[in-house]
Length: 311
Image 1 (cartoon, helix red, strand yellow):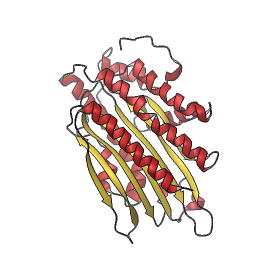
Image 2: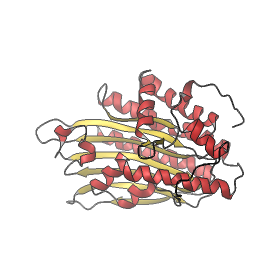
Image 3: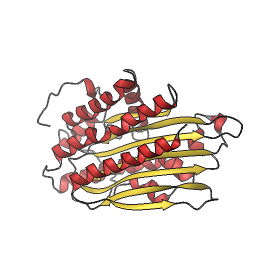
Image 4: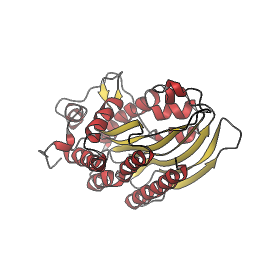
């Protein structure tokens, strides 16, 4: 287990993503470096890269953290009860980007490593992560591009991974109380250690490296689209669903809060503005209704042919 190798990769990935997003936005991300005092519930350090009210992004963060804790929290041992009570080490890069323009989708990506450190046994190491897209107005070309990039990233590690991780993503990013997907999915994996440390780490790197080519072309295609108050209102309404998922279901948020993590960093994923309306439904036949009927359902995006290229 070479944790320094993983740390170096993650810090480099964070910088590459921030540099690419700064080129798109035209403004710089601020940097907030933090370190925990030794002897506490958690030790470690991290680097927050944040933008607010930028030219393109209304709010976005690309965070790195590396922590060591005394006891794995319940969210990390739900599927591994034999590790309950073990100390742990965790590190990762997590990002969420909320654009101003409703025609540019919100995006989330996370890649991480966990190591449980039982006192009387070797370390148990696994990787997790993925990326998913949350559009407010659906475009088939964008969904196809995003999924095809994810599939291409995983293919060198086995043709079975993309369909497996896509299904996992569809099932994970689902608001059970709404009976509704959060977005158009992507890929998601957790507790991954297949092939040993080097193979699993290599797969995680492929996912992390695919983020910029998966997201940047979509931003470049959509950021100049004209929008008005109607589109912004719908964006704020759909952002409410994002908040609900993150606070009720997201394992990363739960892990961070349960382990005593840094609250500002954990809640960086929240949009700057969101709305809730009572029993609201989009007008039939509207672009807002099309998001629900055509996009908020599982589809084999990577294998579909573009039928509406103007969308």
